Length: 112
Image (cartoon, rainbow, N blue to C red):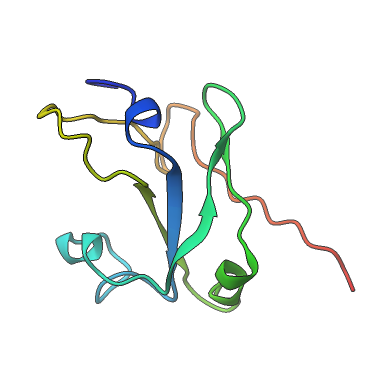
């Protein structure tokens, strides 16, 4: 982490969802950062411990989960800029990280 801790200065860590993906392809591209989300308020994250954060999708978010294909999520903070003129960074590991901190998607459901 460089600068101040964005979890302390940038507000709530949130997630947006897009079915099937942000932008014009599933690959990460510059256009993805400004692409519209299917829903921007599917869940706020809560911190479980130093390395783990959790978010449970609300009913609106669940409606955008593609059961047969891709669904992408985008993380953002409730405060986009703390106006101090200093860049703040937070590291998130990708699924192919060798550091042992790969994100996990846990799916839990209840049969009716």
